[in-house]
Length: 174
Image (cartoon, rainbow, N blue to C red; front, top):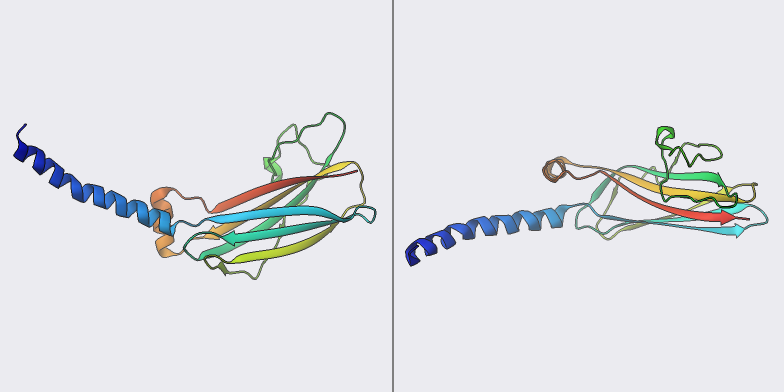
């Protein structure tokens, strides 16, 4: 292979490499990214009040359009030797066969008036949950569904983006 042929191949490859970099940069810059935090604690264990502190932060460079935000709180028997996974089902058909809750409850919609979250913006919500039961685990799940606008829909289709983000937490009550 002559030097001229090699130089031709290198010069022809440069636009391909530049195009790949531009596509990667657009993908990274315009992908929605959300940080979800659930921090449960007992306000007063004797009075049976669980405080659930929730934080949702947009850590991306784009506005995130909110479709729905759900909080799931499920109770599980804390019998000796029981193990629980991190999985929190949001629908009854998603309950693992070996992790039946004491009673399935539908998730609570929260922050219902929130239409979008700006880049860098945080939503913080507190919720009080009353429970008289003893010797139980609580599995908490936070889930946000986002909507894609026109260009977001195109990028989401091209990169197979998900429109759902989820995090979980577990707390025990004597």
